Image 1 (cartoon, rainbow, N blue to C red):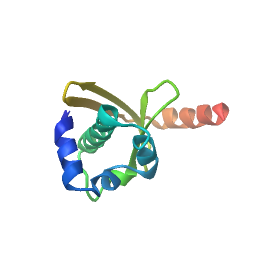
Image 2 (cartoon, rainbow, N blue to C red):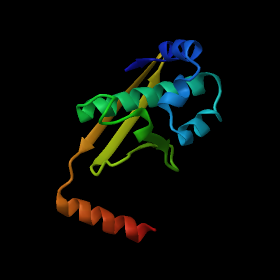
Image 3 (tube, helix red, strand yellow):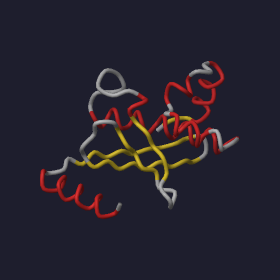
Image 4 (tube, rainbow, N blue to C red):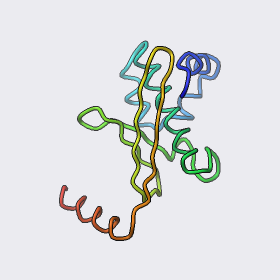
Amino acid sequence: MESISRIEAVLNRRPNFLSTILTPKELEVANKRSGKHYLEFVAGRFSAKEAYSKALGTGIGKAVSWQDICILNDDKGRPVIEVLGQKNELSVAITHSGDYVSTIVTIEKLSLWQKISKKRWERREK
């Protein structure tokens, strides 16, 4: 959970904060938003990236950086998380209420058979 107003205060104090925590693709999406929706987007991505690093058990640092994690929305608006080098199934949920954003990230360890099946399915979809 993250306070949106806290993220707004950090953005005002540290202009480079945005380019530190968001990938170029995320920045592109963020810059198309304004006001409350802009702040919710930034706070949501910050919160989700922190949640992922904590679910991983490492935090942001040597094992994973802000730029290794990219969270964009699919055609239906659902957030989708992608992490460089991550082979497991990832899910993310981001919700906003008042001054808070809440996120949940799950890392599902896939069996070898599930990984092979997933690769086959992805090839079929292309």
